[in-house]
Length: 144
Figure 1 (cartoon, one colour):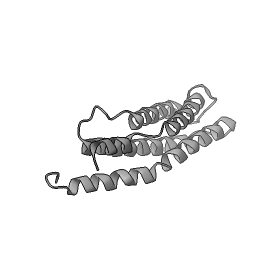
Figure 2 (figure 1 turned 135 degrees about the vertical axis):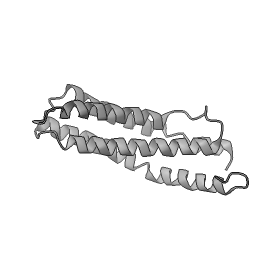
Figure 3 (figure 1 turned 135 degrees about the horizontal axis):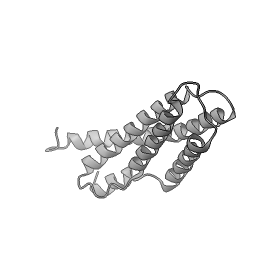
Figure 4 (figure 1 turned 90 degrees about the vertical axis):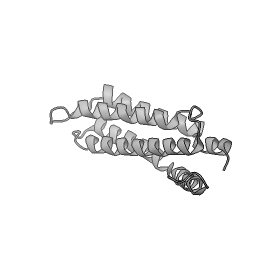
């Protein structure tokens, strides 16, 4: 696979990015301005920090990788960004379970599920990245 093909592979669909951004903005709206509460001290602050972190990871995943000169490194970066997003999202989901019930808590959980579903839909693409990286690593002179 040539450099242009790899670059095209690691460039995410604009519609998916727009939908993921919208889902994250809804999540942030609820986390920051919603009536999300917890009987445990510091839960809402940590929740907001996790939600921001998820947004940062999402931004990283959707970033342009043209500045990375080698196709292998573009793939590694895309895979690392996807993994970091998944990990941050899992931590956010765990933090959200500490929020007390109510309408806002249900809306927050729904927003997290929406974003998690979008991220899960990337799994086939992540698999393709991994297979492509593996193929590039098998090429002569590219062994790690």
